[in-house]
Length: 421
Image (cartoon, rainbow, N blue to C red; front, side):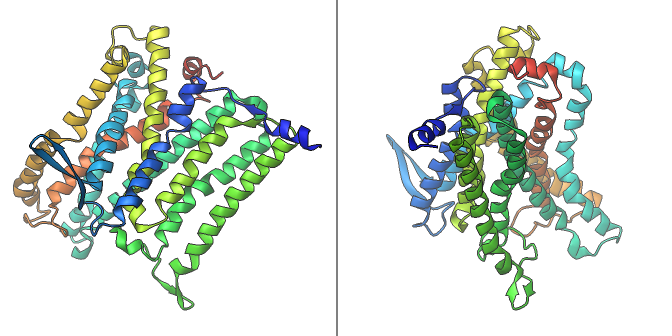
């Protein structure tokens, strides 16, 4: 192929959008830019702080009011209040507030309420077994550690699965750029790009500095720890996988096959960001908002578009709270913020959680024989752990429902709403 012909072929992209091309670029394909901004701020400011999470690096002054700004407040505060918690409401608006959803998946919605009990049960079960002498007393706190690891891994899996879902939607929307071989490559390379960074982090020599429990990678094998044997190879495999995938895309474009622009931009924005979020102990402290902020924006825009298509254009569930929630972007945003402050995060939630935790520690749990009112290691009471795990039920309910309500290949009504037939 001549150079001119090759250049023309490389310029051929299939670019059918999920919403509209400009909306896709802003909210789905380039939304990871918020994570990159967080990462840049953390690396630029945090490296000079003794305690990057809590030490103030600036002061916000409004008249006589002065607010010290820490990275924990700026990064976690803006992410948690403005992006993350409201996106949990987006799921509730399109499920619990829709009477048609209750008719079609009432059992699924009821089952999702069980996740408010899952965390407390995992924390208290080992203590109950200690009480009946089925476990040694030293095993009592293990439930909290197991729940912490379980919750964080599920949260990360949830974010990655959304990226995979968008990738497959772009494949469905651009069939001219997708062949069976493309799907096979995606299915192999995609998990490598997004899950190997977790292995890189868990085997890192600085893993112990991040406050997570030891997972056995410090065991010595043939003169080196297991982590030392695995750490560098995991990073090299990620680089090789990314390079091979990019090389194949270039080769197919050179041969004249159109490439899926939406899919490639999605991978280009998200996969390197997830790798960067786990590359250093400083970045890992803020890995959750770094890796999740773009996911939140994607979800908000996609659910908003779903709501407009379903409740405004098709006039489904008229008069329902779901239809009201999507009447205007201001109503949607206000309801999301109200849910955040009243149910998930905010001073009111913290106050109620403290009252309930104190009651559990002083009355309920001692009466049940689980504790004698003594605080846990690290200063957090058992009641505090139980209440915090119950509040995280909102997030786990979201993870569970998301896996059930966005099955495009199985849900004909959903395909019609999304124009994905």
